[in-house]
Image (cartoon, rainbow, N blue to C red; front, side, top):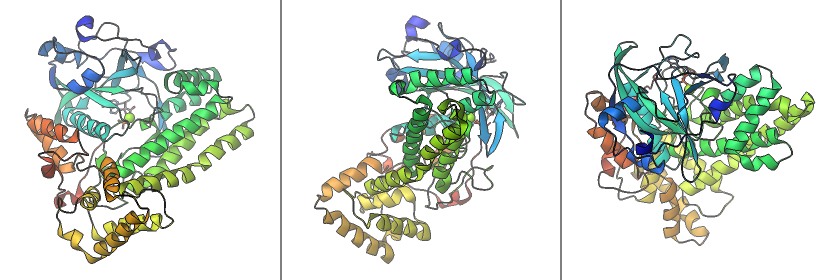
Length: 484
Ligand code: AMP
Ligand code: MG
């Protein structure tokens, strides 16, 4: 199958010692059946599935037949889950290999839901069709919103039922990532207190993701800085589009800065900073407004792992790491302000920008306005008509905003262009995602295809865009689940 598909594996992680992973193959399944294949992603990976039969694809994407050159492993990692430390690892995933494109880009190809591993603890190693389709749809949406993310290459049914509160159809998701190395990977290795292994991981990560650091005097410290900046950029992007990850445990935070692990995530509709969708997030630890603080908390856990390799004097190492972590708030604040300026088309800076931005957010909160649609209204008031935008406080705010736009002598056209580039017209609305998954579970993929098509161009008005723009009020108590 290798030549037909053009797989080009070079499995560097599997060459690390067994401290880092377990060598294991996916557990074969009874009756594999491909559900969806991401042709666009395949193309960008230079993979060609056009000469492969449906049966072969089904077998491939459930792990029943592994491609030549793969060398499958389950990765070891740890994590702070809702604040509590646990030794974990891929309990239901196997990395089948690293595919290299002709431009020398390296991608992990991983099956999720592929059976038990040494890290499964009490789990069955399996995943259900609904949550895997959900990950497929939302990760693709995030990617097309121009936000770094793992991607989804395929979902295939296993033909086996899995036992949850009720019987569900089993499925395997093929996830593509620039790597699956997490903050939790460092935590796992650091917890074992073998400095040689920590150094191996440090070198591996730098060579793979941040080779520019190789020249720096203190590589561990520099890595902390680089990862912090990547994560700040990521969370700013989430805040920009109203994305709530839902389970920002340290094992779900990628060293590469990609969004990873789409479990109970969802997009906020009505603007409320405290929005939480996840059924298990009882205290709101991972609420929309807490995301930056949690990123900082997770980065502090990352910094702790690096202490032994930052400086041989522990006190000195702590001081150096603390200085970096302490710079988080200022960097975040500035980047957040700029992001919000862009959303409002505010070119250049004005001292009153922050209060103008906060006034709008306050208005949205009090008036229960839709986050995405409010910016759409500002970009084109004729398109999204809604009584809420006739509110006099909103109209007053708009007058101030328009004065600010003109103050810097930029053309309104330029302002709107800027807004168009950062304010999506469509997000994966919760009810649309549910509708697509429900239909797919009944073997009707049409709503999923249509949704994915719209989500591919979230910043452009398309024929069916308006159908996907409306939130529904009955979403008020919308809940999401981990799908584990
Ligand atoms: P997650 O909440 O998806 O980040 O998963 C947390 C941990 O639980 C990871 O180590 C997963 O591999 C593991 N896990 C989740 N679901 C299962 C399952 N059904 N069987 C075995 N391990 C699982
Ligand atoms: Mg996870």
